[in-house]
Length: 200
Ligand SMILES: Cc1cc2nc3c(=O)[nH]c(=O)nc-3n(C[C@H](O)[C@H](O)[C@H](O)COP(=O)(O)O)c2cc1C
Image 1: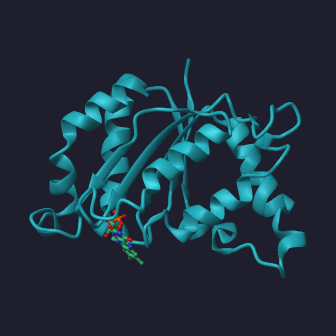
Image 2: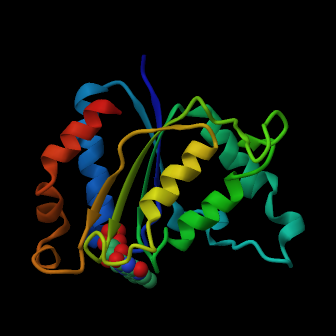
């Protein structure tokens, strides 16, 4: 069966200098070897107005509108796989990704409290398989209080999605990785990409 794959990217780096975009490209290249008939929909959040809107007191009543929220929730309902990439920005996902999630995490649309047990919830996007691809400037472990990869994993699981093993490429700002082009850098984890893509 051919899959419909939504590819969401939230980096603010220039396209040719982005490690997370290179990771995404190499992942898709590898994934396509096993899934040649799949359809891909690309969502660069730099081009989406909703991803630039931050929830505030002033816009609360209009924030979850048809164009900024429902349209994107419907898009998630119409695909069966999501590949989402984000760099770490100030110890979390980029603001573009946060704004995207703030729009699509909507009660009774992507999750429900209705049938839940105490303190629980029911994810309404349980048809989705999600691949998380993250980068960060610092090597893993420098900032244990910041973990955007786990944040994304928990959030997609909250809406019921099955999350494949995430790939974090850490240390992009530190030598020797910082002296490599994104392509050279991501090439160093090609075996990992191959292994994870085969499971997605
Ligand atoms: C505004 C901003 C904030 C950042 N904050 C962090 C951070 O908190 N921790 C970290 O390890 N790297 C941080 N970085 C570095 C980026 O995560 C890293 O350069 C990443 O590779 C950039 O995205 P890319 O992979 O798409 O090129 C930050 C970069 C920018 C531009």
